[in-house]
Length: 589
Image: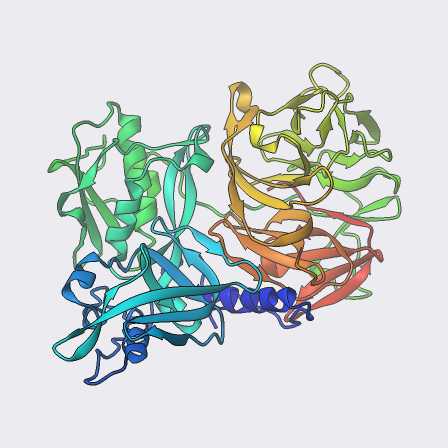
């Protein structure tokens, strides 16, 4: 089972069980296809057209089935429609992803009207944004029919209706891919992950690359694509050698070598996710976009002035706490009874158990934790503890980013601020330089930030927050707008992730496309959950009492600390007890 199908099947089951107050499912969702992995879709499928004498319900059912065609033309699907309905229908409008094992019921409302209903796992809008369905959600659509030559045909459907795709058809028809923008703070691209039908994929990705920077990345990322630019012929071509030719129609490209490099980097990074594409040729109004010293098709970022993409790794080993004692955690020996300290260096100070929610800097040189009162944060360098000058109350879990800043949420002394950063590059003994500075994020007004985690790229942050009374759980992705010295100054508008969470705690990035949290839906017990920046939500096996999460790299290396003081490690389809622990902190990023 692919990851995409597993995401929809597993979470839909959880939602339905939660909605009726039943038990959560206990099996693991198997990982599979990665975002933009370049794995080829399955063999094509062309459903049959209408049969003579089909009933009204049969015609509508046949139309829905024919929407699963993989050729992108949907000619057989259009045979179920009148010519007017066929001309008006856009199969790329709202796509409904049906829940696993969902059956579609069709009801004849009158001789010329059919209503269909099914359980939904989520919807994909015309921009490629996936929204997971609410617990127990169903979807209905009403179709009008007329007789054409003695045969029933659909002549009307809901506005914006695209297709309904069955659970088993999702992996071969739609998948998530990233559209790339350019970081405003360093030489790198920033992904915006959306879902795309797989037919004519290179053209679809190229069209999406023409879009302006989305609201949730505004200020953190830019685009070199000229406003109003179009594709010549509204398409791109890929030759037999895998070279994609992109020819933009545009009145103007901003001047400068850097702008041209940015344009190349955006299209190259986005289009080479298509498994048929190996290199890029780029032109504007038929004139090649030249780069100094670069000839011929381009296949790697380093040829256009960008560092080659490398996985983010850290040599800083995790820190586990048992009582007040801290020790280096060895993930290779995490089976019960085999957890051990990995040498005596680096050494860490004793951090009293009253200081909670431990955080570890990227270089391992600093620790932070919430003060016993819950209204402050302390930092440790060596054996010396430094108090961050008072800034608020109800302090959330602290977290470091890879650029030297400590992030912490709470409620400001003036009741206005909700999120702060501390410059850990400054002398912690300097009360002014080491003070917590508020970030501008008006969308957090009136909320309490439980945790904010910055992605390894430093350009995006996920924020877990609630209303003051603990209700209204929200998990949001936003761009980090930085100023002088890389200091975070404000957040972009939020893009909501996940749906239906009634409680949540703990937060960690698994990779550049996924985060994990411990969340509950409805009355179901809380459990570890993987939430993608593409909108997908994947439940993991239950871990009773889970309260903290940390990873040493990806979902398979995810660890849970429970309220009973036990450390749980992933082992196949279950969690394995790896000994006592009251906290586990992994390096930033």
